Length: 278
Ligand SMILES: NC(=O)c1ccc[n+]([C@@H]2O[C@H](COP(=O)([O-])OP(=O)(O)OC[C@H]3O[C@@H](n4cnc5c(N)ncnc54)[C@H](OP(=O)(O)O)[C@@H]3O)[C@@H](O)[C@H]2O)c1
Image (cartoon, rainbow, N blue to C red; front, side, top):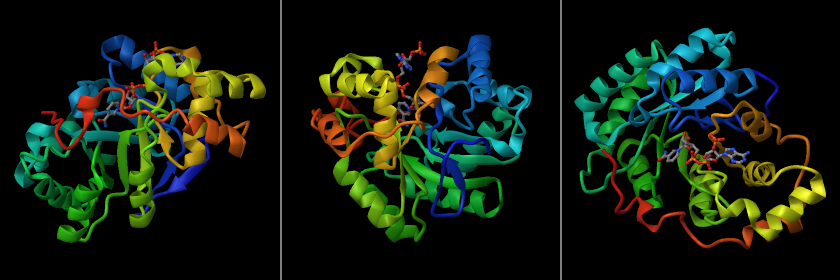
């Protein structure tokens, strides 16, 4: 493991406090960007079957020069494969595309409540973990209600819930449920897809005070909340910038000022009670 500070998940897996998002990193350019991310220090790589880049991620793992055992590779179960047998098959496909015998983290991508088969998918993931084909199992975009269902119906609590989280949408209630259940939060769109969030006054003020960039302030805010941010960048300079967030600390008043930016999801339609992805 590189020098990034880490957490220990509820199943004992050590995980870095920041990871590289890979949505839209595709083809040869995507492969090169994933390699440059790993060479810049990232050891946690966030992919998904739906991103259509598992082959690029697998190739980067093989060719980056960092030992396989130092990397944590995440991929996700797509929404068209909920159900026990479907999940078994989907996992085989992902593992084959990645070229990996063991996947470090496998997450349900969206709960898709109208399908109502995420518990069956979860049972398959428990079996795959018990067989040693996955090191850690978790979910994305799960509400408290869905998390409690997994616990109550299978007795296995996810190690991770990866959700939309940034200063506009800090997910305080959900994070409290995670703390109660022993689930680690991961943040998607952690810098708000680099929109107007980067120019918000409390963020710019903290960036000036610490001699860092807005993106670094926001990523540091995630780390101080205890959530693992997964910033995506295809650019080596921005990848390094986003990784360099362990050399300063935000004060309590800076954290509070950034927290005051709360206004909700980037796009209201991304509510997991109604938004479904296949
Ligand atoms: N589980 C889920 O349902 C879910 C949903 C969405 C995303 N995700 C995961 O979370 C990752 C991150 O989310 P995201 O890609 O939506 O958003 P994000 O990481 O908040 O923002 C990515 C955007 O910011 C730009 N950027 C990155 N670093 C920057 C910097 N330092 N300064 C200025 N611009 C910068 C990137 O452009 P450049 O590439 O040009 O730098 C890109 O356009 C995804 O890649 C994916 O792995 C998961």
